Amino acid sequence: MSGGSRDPGRSVTSRVLAVLGAFDADHPRLTLTGISRRSGLALSTVHRLVGELEAWQALTRAPDGHFHIGLRLWELGQLAPGPLQQVAHPWLQELFGSTGENVHLAVRDGFEVLYVDKVYGRRAVPIVSRAGGRLPMHPTGVGKALLAFEPDRVVSSYLSRPLERPTPHTITEPGRLARELRQVRERGYALTYEEMTLGSCSAAAPVLVDGRPVAAVGVVVSSHRAREMQRLVEPILAVADRIAEDYRSAAASPHPPR
Image 1 (cartoon, helix red, strand yellow):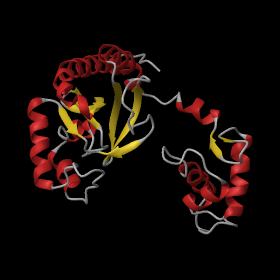
Image 2 (tube, helix red, strand yellow; image 1 turned 135 degrees about the vertical axis):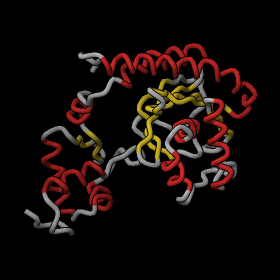
Image 3 (cartoon, one colour; image 1 turned 90 degrees about the vertical axis):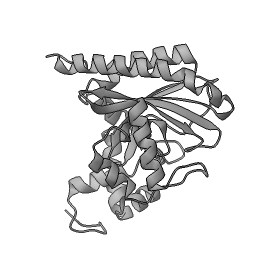
Image 4 (tube, one colour; image 1 turned 135 degrees about the horizontal axis):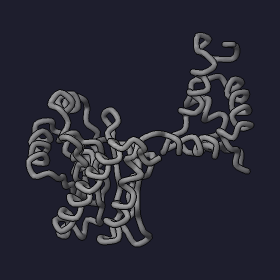
């Protein structure tokens, strides 16, 4: 069952997962060659597995020959447990309605933030975050809001690694970043100024449940409106509190929302 693979020790399951894992927010469409390169599997193996996944609608082939994730996987994804998105989304909509700015919800996954929901409009400033996308923690408002409330051992581990520098304004000095995280924890919210993307600033607050940051809510505005950032803090904090309250209630319910 290992013929055709560059790694003959891999199981069929691991190869299928490697094919699916080749897709991410930065690579939503791939050719067979691209899947082979990103998965580390031989092209012949990829051709066979992709054919089976396409037949099952886990992958879909576009007219130009590229593949993308199919509806069957999207359908299965909707069954994933956890009330966070369900309870948070109405509050994100309300925050967007009151501010008119891009609003997103993120969780920590390792040393990255994973964006799980986003509400935005055509007039809001374009941003790099997308639902299902990942970004480093230290240049993002939601990342700082999450990291600041993690245990010291998590913060220390994060600061001990090489820190990416997406823009000249990104804080990458461990000591300076540690001081800023302490300030974020003291005041309860984070601010960034062109640290992830030139032309964008953000404000974010953690969703704290029993003192643990289960998520963070952020709003992004254009840099030329940076002076308005402070007015966003109060509504962001209020929405983060409402999400935490509803999340706590939903988690305690015998029939949490799906």
